[in-house]
Image (cartoon, rainbow, N blue to C red; front, side, top):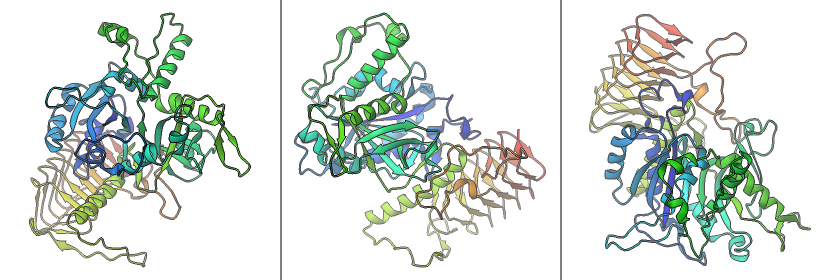
Length: 526
């Protein structure tokens, strides 16, 4: 049985996503018609709907059929902020058990996992009341990641195609498989960099956001973990407790393959207050991955052919593998990243719909420019170009033209003659007649008057198309260091913003509940 843990953080995070995160938690921000975190759940759901067990010998079984039985959202938002989403998600994915685990405080990407380790590894009961299967592995996914998640490929590497696990299972168990991608030399310093053995896929060295170039293979923030990973986290917890002067005796909890459910009874019977007090901030990147990469490196030596081999006398708690993918991947740190993610999620949705309908997928034309003609929507009568999502409750005038890469949310109203491209229109927003919206996000209940122009810059929302492996730069400064001006950005209207008719708004950010009576360019309207 597999589980998935999605790390969604809390209200103190996502500040670069403001003002969009002021009225809705960042994990619930809709991209391509679904909340960001629901794309993670959907990827887990598509692994399969029937429970199955991982073969111990790691052979011959189609790992894409293994499914996630339970999804745990882990963060420190209030329970009421996620209640409606949890109800909707449970109804949408009836074969998944979806729950929210609220941290007592911000514990870091590994601290929260360790705090709820018993819940993560607890078997799910069967319908007849008997104890269910043991957890054989669990995914950990950062909630601010957007991607075409290759979860089946990670399973294949973790369980089936790893000679280290079969030949050196006792000395070198695979504790974690990390989804990785390649980026440019200049951009790599903004991510967690990994030095990976190309033959064995072992992570030999890991540095989080180095000051100089280390490797162009970077961490994507998606992991497949063995239950035995908690052995390493427990050791780190013990070391950090001792270094902080905590003299109380700590108990290392072991989750071995022969006894995965051996939970420390003394720890389990402690009062809730003591267990919360014992919580400690730990990070998957700086603490866990760096530890495993160091141990993997110490257990390897260079052979005569230049490849790495495990030493026969090496003693390591486990190894970390890198599953490098060429699938699309991006972080959702800024509002501009939402426009980029919206484009790719819309394309993935269209591709999957074609596969379900058994229709051939059009190959790209050899010419760098592909001509796309507007087509009328058979239901609403309006015209679209490229990939467009419109919520069934939205009202779109037949003379409107949407696309490419446009999402229109629940209850939105698009008036006659409106042109929208590369934009997201959120719930209950109104776009007045003959207005133009490009590279922008229109907030909830925002209103754009007639004959307006709301336009942002595409440069901030797209990687450089002329550079191989280029990604969005997650730390692009908001203001220009030379003249203090706002750098080119998408235009954002916060919740409840009212833009009066015949106003031009270019490369600007408007905070919630403002009324604009004149035009603005390259400004933040507070």
